[in-house]
Length: 237
Ligand SMILES: Nc1ncnc2c1ncn2[C@@H]1O[C@H](COP(=O)(O)OP(=O)(O)OP(=O)(O)O)[C@@H](O)[C@H]1O
Image 1 (cartoon, helix red, strand yellow):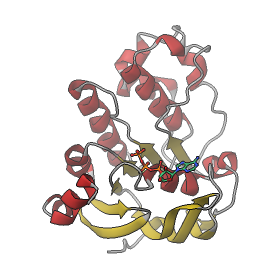
Image 2 (cartoon, rainbow, N blue to C red):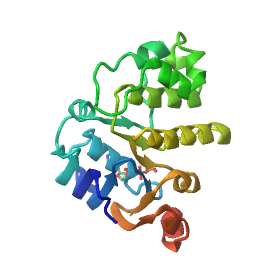
Image 3 (cartoon, rainbow, N blue to C red):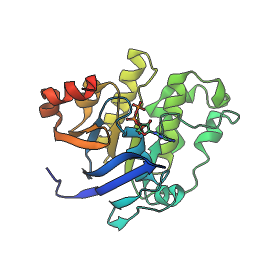
Image 4 (cartoon, rainbow, N blue to C red):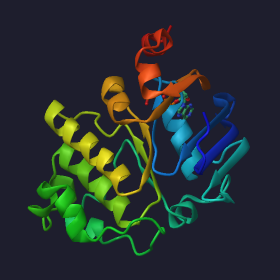
């Protein structure tokens, strides 16, 4: 199922770590305003896929088209300036800087909906109460909110999320996923890698199953939620 207005199109993407091929011939697309989930067991290649799209890892072959231009092989900073924010699993905030300073590090506009500091605080009120606190002293959930907030300050058209609910309490995880759903309402597209498959399929429009580096299934969130293939992928069979 290809969307009419594709924002991101990945075609035949292959990526490796030395001789270990972690992604083989992966093709997918994300339409404007869509939330697309990538589902797969541990080690399936989900993080590698996001890294190969955002430029953290240079792909061996394949093409990545974003907002009409070729980006495969470009540096991550150049890709983020085109309007793609990557919120990595490790969150990668600056622990020795305040929350406010972390949010203020972005000095460019990716061309998507604009977020000012007040908008990030409206989305995550907890951050508003901790603007002057060192980022390294935040709880895991607060750090995740900060990482998301910082990604939004770059006015992205597309946000890549790597397991945003990992390590969060069920309540915080729900809040983070609700915030991601809220991005769609503001016209931001999302590519979401999430361990919590049920939660991911609740907010996603469509999804792909990644198994040992290959896409083995794709469909609407509903189709995938009912598919035995998903259970297999999650059991790693
Ligand atoms: N830096 C690296 N060097 C060598 N192999 C790597 C490296 N990073 C990942 N791999 C391997 O590539 C494969 C895909 O890893 P990746 O982290 O992309 O999977 P994942 O689906 O994100 O897994 P998880 O859910 O456990 O984070 C795995 O077999 C992994 O061991």
